[in-house]
Amino acid sequence: MGSISRHLERVKAVDHFRLTIGHEVLGVYLHWLGLAADEACTICGHARMDGDHLLECTGLDEYPTDDIVSRYWEAWRQMVKKPSMSVG
Ligand SMILES: [Zn+2]
Image (cartoon, rainbow, N blue to C red; front, side):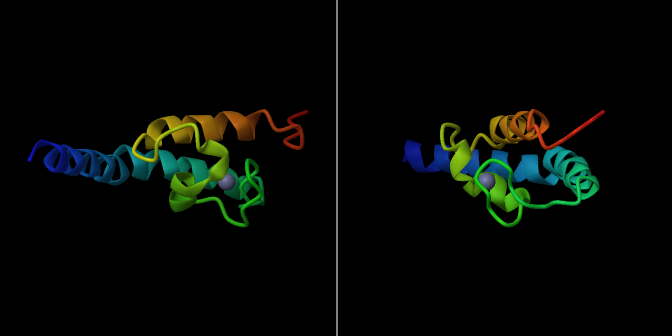
């Protein structure tokens, strides 16, 4: 009975992240994307980057889908270092 309940614990952890940290962080992230006037995923070219795509993005496959924090930061890193984001 161990593995199923452990899986449920993980699911709950992701839910918790989405409801608390995820809500704020993704809000800032999406706002930042709004400033960039481009909601497409710069990592894989998907038409729309949002909280759900963060879990589906093929460019983030090296990070497990239950590790949304790592996926988020990797996505952020890759977007920030994108050359088309001219800062000055
Ligand atoms: Zn993507």
